[in-house]
Length: 270
Image 1 (cartoon, one colour):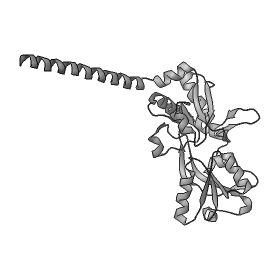
Image 2 (image 1 turned 120 degrees about the vertical axis):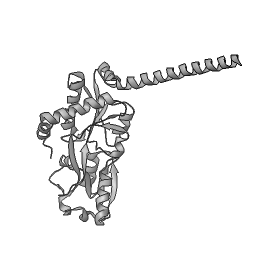
Image 3 (image 1 turned 60 degrees about the horizontal axis):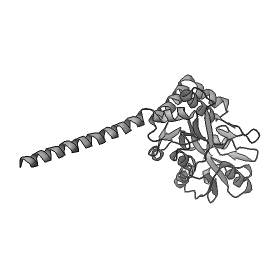
Image 4 (image 1 turned 60 degrees about the vertical axis):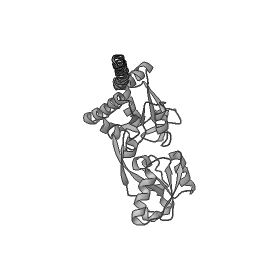
């Protein structure tokens, strides 16, 4: 009996030590996650990988003549690179669309996304988002010759939207309120939607108003309505909390200093 008690005691002691060891490992893992390993990886690499739009004039646009990507969000990305790496030019800009930006972030191909990414409660479950750096509403562009002045005028019409964007839900919600029956065609890029509008394959082009302004020309007009205010935030991967903090600090510092407003004026964003 005495031997059995000793054996049980020994087993309890060993089990306790094993659990303590497991606990220590878990604590070390958690500590590693919160100790800036994400920032260290960026510093070791020497560049900040950023997913940006290349087809949104004024926000992120690749000039076909120079192949240079410029815009409001590019300047914000450079400010984050400067904060982390001390040099705004240490950015590796990678083209994304509304459909690809999430998967590229999930796979670790980019560290953050600065690409007219609307903050929603659903998206917050998957990504860290910075505070908003710009707020806009969903707009609608039509051909001048069509004479369409509001959403009611699109009853029975086709609206072109980007894949995986929030525009479709926003317009559908408003159309339902007024009993306007609309259908949607989804496209991979904004230039494709504009080309479809020009060719008459869709009757309207819908995306955030500031983005539409970059595609406005003599044959088109943006109707005088905005729907579902959209907050743009910079997204990073869940668990990369030190990176998320550096991004958010940069955005708020730019707000406080007035630099964000200066950039909005610089790029003529409305």
